[in-house]
Image (tube, rainbow, N blue to C red):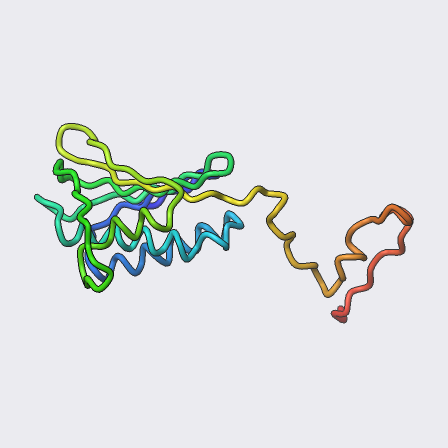
Length: 170
């Protein structure tokens, strides 16, 4: 089930390898919808690591919930599972091929953590700084109009301009 109020999105799934890829695509699409394209790669990396941990370590099942929430200028991504055991971050060398997931999440995120969730579960989360809406580029112009035709300038307000002509014949 997917619910998508304005700045909140949750996805429930069984953390299997095929589903992890699907959730990565959902996270990417949702962030693009929110105009947070610069965060896509980091969010996908973090969610992939957290879901892989659920797949490898969670007991008694692999069911979990991914939650994305955008509040002010911070994106929080969380994974809830049914295993009450809290993860342990181990010191690993740079050549290790496993056991580095939470260290990678810590390295790419602004903050991260883990806490118990209910009697039989936990949530692992991380945050990314979200660009302010003013820093997000405007959508592309419609019907081939240029940005200067779409916006007024101090020298000539939009109300004094001739309407832009469409390059599309109709």
